[in-house]
Each structure stands twice: as structure tokens, then as C-alpha cells.
Image 1 (tube, rainbow, N blue to C red):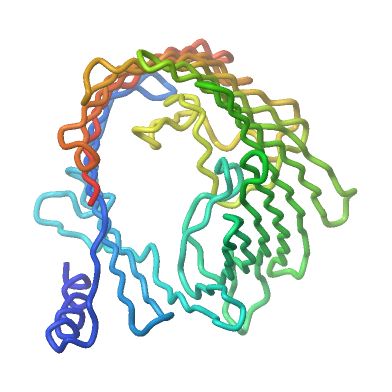
Image 2: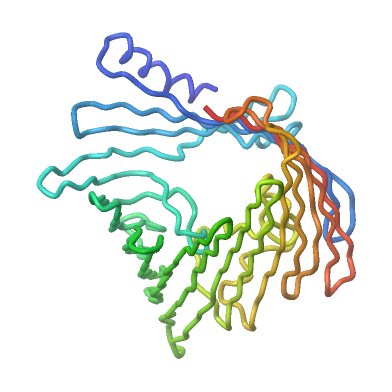
Length: 369
């Protein structure tokens, strides 16, 4: 709280003096979950998180943006500030950058801590420190060129991890995109490794049906051993008939898969993947399509049925290589449409190798503003 207060005081002074006007945005989330672990021991937890975004236009063509996060605070957990009379330090900086319009190029450059994610979150879906140059055309095309600073040691030590990123998105006959990422990592013993990741995608539509196909290729430059080549594909299909919607998500990765940075690929499962309403229940999912030693596949089918203009029920079932099979379902209710939602869900999974049966039940309350 002390750190947040020290930050808010100068902002309030600036606002009072009329030097800058700030637009606010953010979200509040509280989740409660009950589940058993890989040893079938029962437990659960409740956590809360608050994000606050601040945007200000200093002059025409120059903006500043910051987003701060309070939490996740686990109820009753002293380390995260949720214990009785602990009030721990839990304020984090998710984003902190300037956005400057380079008029000669008609392009924007962002400098600082910011967010970027690839089309399906296979490699990166997170905040990072770096520089990104972006340009949009009147034809609806968007091009990005960026430097991501993944890791760097102090000046008196060796070791760094930099990633160069180029991304193009737009629509000609159909929506499409292509991201290329080159990573170069040197550890503190001066051993160098790297990779070149290529991630195209294309989205096809016909009436109520949509098919999104995103193959990937990864050339892995290794030290003291032969280089490797990984590949795979993610395919997502949806059919929305109004009275109900069905879909499927398939992820295949051949041997070696792809080099990941901070992925958040959602396959729709909670125990054997990442679900939409809770990303912390995945007992066994640990990016199994990255540097995998054998073929990997995740296949999930889903259905959603609206039961009113504010509520819908949903369910999914799927299987993941060497992990297990899961079924899940729940109900999502819009307490205040586009602002406040309440979701309840449950999942049951059967682990292939250990014959352990896992379950999870939870609720998520979320407010966006």
C-alpha cells in the first residue's frame, strides 16, 4: 500500500496542476477454486487481482501509458499479503511505456514495458521490456518490428537473451498474418544458443463456420550439438448457429516442437491445459509442445448454449498426449453486460500414466472498466 500511495501522490498533484489528464481503465478479478492435486489430496484457494491502466496524451503524437497490478493476493496467505494483518507488498508494474508518432514514417514507436502476443499465444502472450515500431495502412494492414529484452545481466557480468520480432497482419481475400521471431541467448559462460520461429496463420469463414489454421516452424540453433528443426500446427474451428455453438481445438507438434518465451495457449481444458476462466488449475500442463521428444497432440471439442440474453452454459471434452482425458462445463452469467460477469465451472480428469482422477470446481467474478 505504501508503494501505491507514493505513486498516486505525484499523479494527483499533476492532475491538480492541470499538467496532464489521465484516462483510467482496468479490471478486478476474484476467483475461488476447490480441487485435488496429483496425489489426490484435496484443497483449494481464493485469490484477488486488480489492474489499473493510466493513459495520458502529453502533446499531439506523444502518449504515456502505465498499468499497475495489485495481487494476486491469495486469501489467508501471508506471503502474498492475504494473511491477517500482513498487508504485503504486492504492487507490480505490468506496463510502462511512451507511444510516439514518427510523422516522417507515419508510424508509432513504443518504448518501455509493454504487451505483445502472437496469434494463438503459442510462443508469447505476456508483458516485456523493449521497443516496438508499428505502422498501419489505409488498407487495414498492420506491420510491427520489435526488440524484446528477455534477459540481461548487469554490466559487469556476461549473459543476455534478446529476441527480434517482425509481424504482419491484415486482410486481402481472407484474414492472415505472419510473425517471425529470432532469439539469441548467451549464458554467463559465453555459450550461445538461438532459434528462428515462423508463425503464419489464415482464417477462413463460410456462413456460420470459421476455421483458423496456424502452422509453426522452429529452427533451433544449439551449442555443441547438431541444430534441430521443430514444426506443428494449431487449428481452431467454430460453428455458431445462434441457438448453440460448437467448436474444436487441435494442437499438433512434431518432435522438438517450438521455442517458447511466455506462452498462454488456451486449449479449453482446466486440468490438462489452460481454460478461459482459470489459468492456475493446470496440474500437468507445462508447455508440452516445446522441445518435446516425441509427437504431441491436444484435441478438444466444445459447445456453448445461450439460455438467456445474459447467460450461457458451456462444456468441453478432450485428450492430451501422455497427460489424460478431461471433461468440463459451467455457466457464465453477465451480471452487468460488458462490465461484470460471474462464472461457475467444474472439471474432471483421468490421468493416463498414474490412473489418478482429478477434479476442480470454481467460480470467477470479473469486472472490466
